[in-house]
Amino acid sequence: MSEASGKVSAADRPNEEVGQASQAAAVSTLATYTASDDMTGAETANTDETCTMTTEPSQPSADQEENLPDNVEMSASHGEENSQMQLDDSPSPSAREQDFTESRSGRANFRSTSSKIANLRAAFENDTPANGPPRRNFARSADRRRERSAQCSKQCQDEIGKLRDERDREEEMKIALEEKCTKLEEELEALEQQTHEQKGTRDSSPGQGTNGTNEHNHEEARASSAQSDEVHLLQQQLAELKKTISTSTRMSSSVTDSTFAQEMGVLHHELQNWIVLNFRRAKMDAAPNELCNRLEGTGDFERVAWLQQVFRVFDPTAKLAFLQCVATVSLMDVFCAELFFGLNKGEQWCADLLKAADSMQKTLGSVAYAKWRAATVEAVGQNAVFQDLLQKAIEDAAESICHSLYKLTEIDVGESGKTSLIGIIKRAASLAHLFSFQQAQYQFLRPNPGTPFDAETMEDIAEDGDELSSSVVSCVTFPSIIKHGDECGDNSHLRNVIMRSRVLCRKVES
Image (cartoon, rainbow, N blue to C red):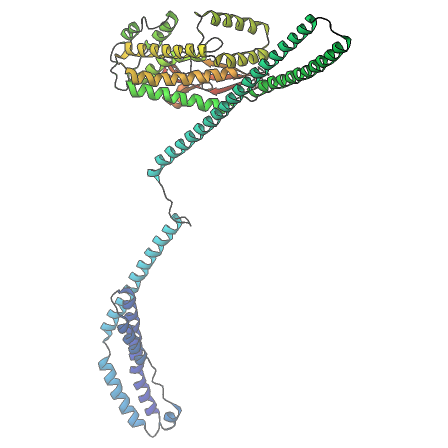
């Protein structure tokens, strides 16, 4: 019995070694399948089937254990033969070690590759937001800015159009009411004249019979009473019409500061574009003293002296800013004119009006004078004679600007350029008259050359940033606008900078 058991154990030992070798081969096959991309499904199925068939344990059943003593020799002999066959078919120990080493290296390579992929995926997920990678539309930023600028410009133009339409409607209403008022006045005068004639006829007629006289007097009294009632009714209608005209033409609301800032900003850009369009190719290689000499005779003494002070520090790299400064000096006459732009002191009625304005300003308070000025501008502005004077003043201003720029650059802008400049000055004149309608006081400032830079009222067109603290003004391309008081003309201590002046600065030489 012991001998049989020993033979059985010896027979089982090769089977266990064969099972271990089969398991190692299965692990190697699985690792090779995982690491390889070219392994097909059929090969995987065959490998699994082989592993299953090879690794099944050869345990004897209960019946076989009972019959074991009788068949020991046979079992032992068969076990040795089976063991010998399986040992012949199984790989050698060196081959198993090589397969095991390859299996371990394959698993290590697979783990390394999987670890790198996992690290890359984690890094990508950390850098990528939940809603996907950020989209940077740098190419579209310029288009968006242009669209926003065009949209703002369109809104401004629409608002200006609405205000102009409202003004036109008020003008039409005013004209219609004035015509009706004139017609009623004529009817009233005709009725009054007819009444006087009837009274004169009655007084001059000779005496008649008592009955006839009384009857005639009663008829005249009734007619006179009816005419008096009609005259009274017409007088009431006339008074109501005058009140309506006064109400409809009165400035009921003031223009906001933001509206003035937008309109003046548009004017500044139009003037700047005109300078760039006509003088960007100008060759100004002359010395500053030569440029100052060229300015002689381009205007009155005060203006020429101020411009010469500007061009003493002329910078050729900023020639367009200096040329725009020349145009701005003439444009200041539009906003700083006495009473309002367009009045010619050579005309007698203009001189009388300016004299009356001076007396009113000294006599009336600031609020009352602002109301008087607004009413005067409204009344005079509709006059055809004044419109001719205004057009002449606008053309003279354009001619003065073109002449000064020609002396500096020797460039003639031609009729088209002059026409464009006339349109710009006409826009400035309309804004100047609109400022005159307001009850608040507006101040237009033009910084002198050499003035220290003030960030509250100035804006440097060169945008030097922090370096402006030690800078002074070289030239000014557009004035600043400062409002004193509120919309009703009260609280004169209030001060608001509506628009900062555009200046070109330079460093102070130490």
